[in-house]
Image (cartoon, rainbow, N blue to C red; front, top):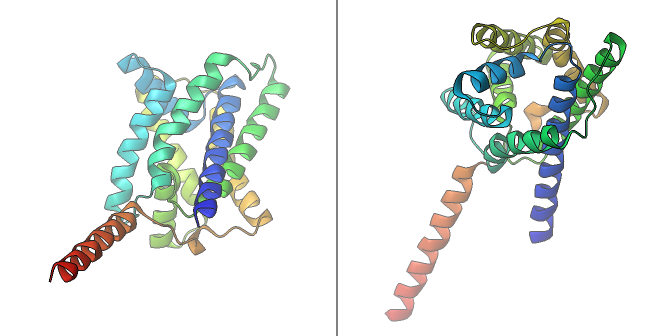
Length: 228
């Protein structure tokens, strides 16, 4: 049981690393930030914080929206919100991802980034420990509307882009490519791995709280019986 939990969390962290690498690739493609990163940069510039910190703040806001839409929050959701932004700062500051110096290399890096993001989502969502804030929103909307993933993700990307643009985030041809293409890359990878996000049963934080309460209640009952 413990080994299984540990392996789940290892898979979760690896998924987050892939997602952080994906964001770094798309930023360093140097063709304009992805829609969410336009938003993150806008917030970063306005508040004087790092991109990773802005990512965490946006994640917190989206988690609240997810809760309103009825999507339960899991440990994976919380860790996603904290760790992807942290890993992103480490990757960007370490300069391990090169910066593209021409259009062809930039487009290739964008495609690599979108593939890494989709694969990272398969890894961590498949753990059943809760979706990431943005992916949770995507899944919640899909459950309510039964619309294709690429359509829902596309609308989300465009909304993030509009807000980010008015906050002063940088846009370019890469912004358009990721706004339109990310949903399709996710759809392709999901189909490739026969991954159906709607079929995943997530263990949410409330489950663990109720389990702890049950254990405490049993211990109290047992103690009462022994005293009697």
